[in-house]
Image (tube, rainbow, N blue to C red; front, side, top):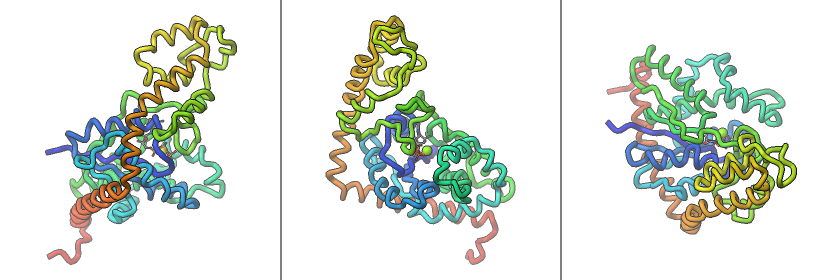
Length: 333
Ligand code: ATP
Ligand code: MG
């Protein structure tokens, strides 16, 4: 039987180069062989943006455009909007009986995100945000997905989904597969500011849709080895964010860049100019495709509506099975 992928993105901003190398390329590669569902996770985005619904709304189609631009093929993959599949919310409720509050509080990803979002949660952490791993388990399992291409930050959340599956299947009988996270060769791209993760919410990202001038400006401001002050000071590429990106975008020039930096022959300005050009060149065909779709929004909307309808049919099937196993199918003929 064909294996099934569920993956997706939160509509909290357009997608960035961390997404591109962390998860988008994997889903494009895998869509030929797997039954693939790609979710715009608007319900999850609202867990920490409940006060900003306009932001979530604005980014739903941005995220879809990014997926189409990088090569997600609507003939192969099903693109859907989370809030339009109410069965996910229903499954979340059933799953929440199987997870303790302490287990949620121990999830390292949730813990770190709460710390980063101190402004949102200054009055206390909400039930909805603390519980997002449960709702993410429902996202995956309502499609009976066994494979989840993600960035490294999401692995603890998938681990929680596996625990839910184990418990559910033990109590109610085998319904769900244990989902497996799949990370890429670049599972956690650093932010422009040197922080551990490029992230839409941290304002440290180069977006797939950024104009060349914007990319150049962002790269010129990126953090480098802080000990390399003058052009001819020797630098340490391994602590430099710019070098980190060269590894992806400047494969052919990388050895030369590395030794030039270490020997104090290559200054940061030239190094950054080279990177900016390579990123701009890399993104050019992707942006061209993005513009095509942006100018044909009727086509994009149809892709999303068809995808969501197809996904909902699958979710309904799963919920029928779930209710049978949970013995709440009272009016079954
Ligand atoms: P937010 O800050 O709103 O959470 P985000 O940048 O973390 O946004 P998500 O939509 O949460 O993006 O994540 C979508 C997918 O991309 C997930 O699988 C996530 O693990 C992956 N991802 C996010 N950031 C990175 C990164 N810097 N490097 C690699 N993968 C990433
Ligand atoms: Mg995230």
